[in-house]
Length: 568
Image 1 (cartoon, rainbow, N blue to C red):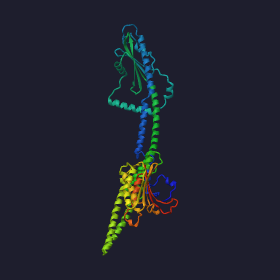
Image 2: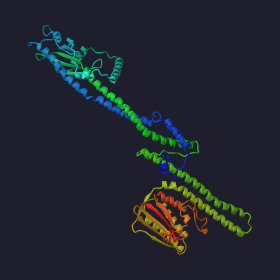
Image 3: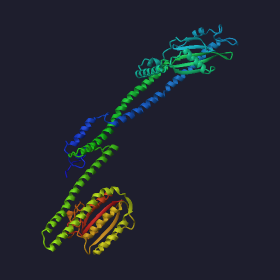
Image 4: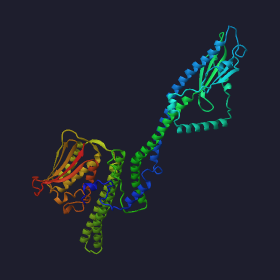
């Protein structure tokens, strides 16, 4: 193994499944080229970035639209103007009522009743205001237009000349669209006299009314109607029309400020969305590019280089979790590929031995003459065939083990009951060989969750191994102890023990260290399969020798001990 410093191990792109990759490898170069094509802010290549910007702008537009729609200041000014208009139009009506004398019913249009035009001419009206007087038959008997220039308020002095570019542009656009629809619909402009006459006819002539609408130029317009009474009857109606330009000015200024802030907020939102997207979309794109490069390279059957998944596990978010999960999956995949390749090589090597023996025996069988020698060669052939059959069966079981461990469903079971049943069954085999079989189990049940049949396969293998290594007069002891959140199952024997050089190898596939008389009777996969099953349950398994004293490791072992630790 190559020693690596901590700094080297904390590089951003840690190679998975391989300790070294050339710095200018093809895979890394393809990933750099993909990043260069994508750029820092790639709207055209990142649908996620476009979605982030779009949704942020939608929320901002809804907020601004709500502010413009719920314009409380405009409503307040409109209410104040309506109250003032109501008082003014009633005052004008009172002027006409004061000029009507006597109790006799008169009409405004009669000569000598009231000089309507002279009365209207004596009124001081603001510029932009208009007063129209109708008789009881809704005929116009007089009208006047205001000429008095209003005094400029402080608000108008400070804000009246400020430019409102955005509001003016939107208002011009709205007027253009409105005029277009008016032309298409064929609506003709209505004369002011006819409009007021319709309002009088449609409403209650006995009440004072104030109507707010828009003029032909799109400006806010107030219309007030007040009855003229004489002798208890309505003899006419005063119509007072004025353009509320100051309200439009204030509203336009406020709208301009809101729209200016909207433009600034839009630019800030887009900038922040791009920054947010770069911290989300770009890392995800790196992960996707790395996976796609591996997929495309597999399609093209390109051999060099392994897939490099960017290391983003330092991020405390879902992208960091995704990077860690992908790196773990790729690492497990490469480990599985390496394991399968090594397994295939080991299988080929193990099968060659009995095949070579078979070929040699068959070749010798053709030339020998004596029946005794033929019988020995046939025994060799039979032994090698059984060895091949056992080897192929064990290899088949080992190759299917991973998929079966994933497919089978774990269940809770009593570990003590399972060990006790196995001990009673296998203890009879041990006793027939003259081996003492001892069990030491706790009195209380120990329940664990796992695959009972697979774990039983582990303990059957450990106990049968112990029986095969023991002779007449030896002993085997199986005992269980609970330690916090784990349970230890120990199988001990008083056999020859395990050679020191074999302690680190006995769990490898096809490794077997047995007496010469047992040659070919074991495939060397039992302990490897046991380790695989135990680790799939989150446990550990190890082997050690039993010695008279732990201080003297050179002393002859008194036996072997196999320990299985399983989580509870």
